[in-house]
Amino acid sequence: MTGRIILILGGARSGKSRHAEALVEQSPGPLAYVATAQAFDAEMTTRIDIHRARRDVRWQTHDCPFDVAALLADLPSAQPVLVDCLTLWLTNHMLADHDLAREEAALLAALRPRAADLVLVANEVGFGIVPDNALARRFRDCAGRLNQAVAARADRVILVVAGLPLTVKDVA
Amino acid sequence: MTGRIILILGGARSGKSRHAEALVEQSPGPLAYVATAQAFDAEMTTRIDIHRARRDVRWQTHDCPFDVAALLADLPSAQPVLVDCLTLWLTNHMLADHDLAREEAALLAALRPRAADLVLVANEVGFGIVPDNALARRFRDCAGRLNQAVAARADRVILVVAGLPLTVKDVA
Amino acid sequence: MTGRIILILGGARSGKSRHAEALVEQSPGPLAYVATAQAFDAEMTTRIDIHRARRDVRWQTHDCPFDVAALLADLPSAQPVLVDCLTLWLTNHMLADHDLAREEAALLAALRPRAADLVLVANEVGFGIVPDNALARRFRDCAGRLNQAVAARADRVILVVAGLPLTVKDVA
Image 1 (cartoon, chains in turn cyan, brown, purple):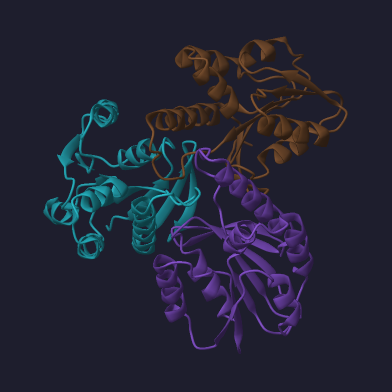
Image 2: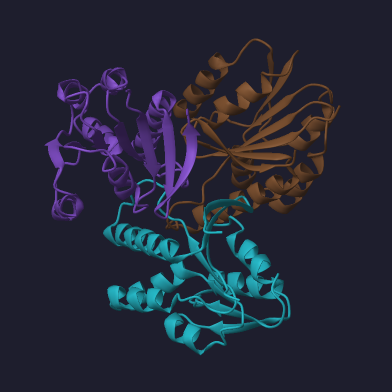
């Protein structure tokens, strides 16, 4: 059996992480949670703790702010994986001034079919007005391009609105 | 007969209010318009006046910036109700430094099935980049969570895009 | 045969231009590309060049930052047309302090059925939090209203999310 690659898109506080977790929790056995968040401040630490406390005991958390591609290669192919989220992963690489083209190429190459589902969460950030500062515009461009590239490789793409799924792509 | 609870989501100038009004106007008899807007300045006063001038004569307007739960309990169950909008209601409570958890619990408890339709309008505000200031981030979080909670209780959820409805949930 | 009027909406870096181009390229013969972008700075020049390099040789580019209505009247009715994009066109008129009501009325009057398809691209900009400054709020209002007016006249409206089309309206 081949797992699916599923991209869950959503805005801030849209319920996208919860939707993604519920999707992966439909699978039996241990589940891999790839957490890309880095706790820089108290606000972020609180968010991470809330997310962690909510998840069921089958989750094994892997803190992975940077090399998600290598981690995906290491995890057993039959274990369902949730990557939450690609947008923070992109932020981490931008703040660290890494070569984004290289990192994205490595990530996309790692999005190969696995025996179990691979679910990736990302923020949709392009629906506001043009940001004032150039860094925010660059981030918005990079995040949008990354979402497009991952969506092109995904079997399913779901946009979460107020906790509810809108299916945007479904290769049945 | 039982009325439906319908949540109309949309961005700024998406036509969400107009869509919600048209929906409620399909019902016969007098209609209750629960207006949460407070006219703090000329810009807001103009907006309120434009909305009001557009509505048909069957609407009875109730200005209600804070206690929507109590008003819903007072209105006749057989009268169709439009609440426009939850996001301004949330803003009012935040600016007044009220206990948001308590206010939200009261509102959600008031979203019980009525004899006629109850239509609620809210802004979708989470699809842009992360705001610079902490208050805007907190507002975005609260608005997103409120939308999720109301959507979970709604029979129908519609996202309005350029004046057009996208059905996100429909418990037929 | 009558062409369709198709509105392609999307956020920043959503793939909306690429989707619109692919749609028009399904038609045979020469294609008209109505480019509303003005290259004020290096960032914009780069964007325009990238878009131009990507397009196939059948495209004839018409730089038209302001009078799209007149250009549409001049182009052969049997030639497929892509206008990319309405949001920049609106920006151009706002920055030039033109009479927006007059310009919009002229544009909308020009959206008549043609022998070939007329595809228009626009940004969806209303899904973020309320902008701090009044000009950004005014722009957001104008862009939202313009999108509604064009969508009302369109045979098809598509929202592009991560490069993927969500059909919002389809008058078959």
